[in-house]
Amino acid sequence: MTETGTGVTGPTDSALFALPKAELHLHIEGTLEPELVFELAGRNGVGLPYASVDELKTHYDFSDLQSFLNLYYATMDVLRTESDFAELTRRYLATAATQGVRHVELFFDPQAHTARGIRLETVVDGIGAALDEAERDLGITSGIILSFLRDQPVDAAEIILSVGLSRIDRIIGVGLDSAEVGHPPSLFAHVFARARDAGLHVVAHAGEEGPPEYIREAIDLLGVERIDHGIRAIEDPELVARLAGERIALTMCPLSNVRLRTIGDLAEHPLRRLDAAGVRVTVNSDDPAYFGGYVGDNFVAVRDALGVTAQEAERYARTSIEASFAPDARKRELLSEVDGWLG
Ligand code: ADE
Ligand code: ZN
Image (cartoon, rainbow, N blue to C red; front, top):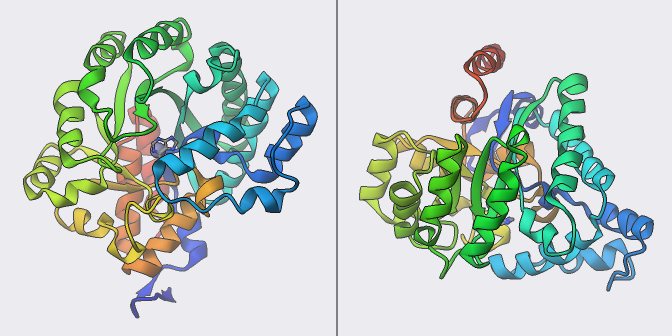
């Protein structure tokens, strides 16, 4: 146990890192560390508008979601080959393993790659190869979620879904991300219905910058099983009660919300208040290379800023496993790993 910023004793950093958990909100392209940007740029002959890693890092000061997305889409241009995607994923998994990740469901943004002439199969096969290795070598299980870019035309999402369905063996679900405001879930109802009909799981980013109404639309019109972020639900008590009653889990990303200035200070984060209201909440990292921490770091940050206790951290970890799309037998196995954590 350790003294937290709120004067309460909480779990130590190493205990929070060791806590077995599932990561349910992770953009694999958001794990592209600046050092790897330079390595891949060199390998692939891609010119960069930055002289050094340190100069690139000076651009990691974001004013909102869009300012981050501009850099995120620009830097991923260094990812060209199947082995680049495998290397990216391998490095994420090596770090995730040290932070207690035992199962991960990661997003990828196929349209951001096909727009650059890179085939969806190249991306999926690279990511998939590294995930297979991690299951064998690290015991981390996983799934891949194809995420539609909501700020691109709906027709483009329909097309990329058709391509994705040709690799349905490798994909467990679909999601919805990129610039939220002005791009409501309702636009994507037909694409999501097709995905559901194909047997895929469905999730969507909602209530990150967008209003609580987008969370309602994601539930009612897309049929989502989880909401990614959902922080703005806290503005709407009726919606909070509904999320709790319908047991819809939120995949929250505290450090991301601070870095993208969707909240002013971590101490204002609604994670703990939503938990207290009976909403199923989980802690995740979103784009850890850009936001100053992986999932274990996010647990440490909410302990310090919100006074999250060991019992609460354990509940968030259990929820991450229960709300995952892992087979029931795997969920039972992971929940029993959590059983020993508090001692
Ligand atoms: N794509 C990558 N990170 C994202 C985020 N935090 N919100 C929306 N789209 C994203
Ligand atoms: Zn996200």
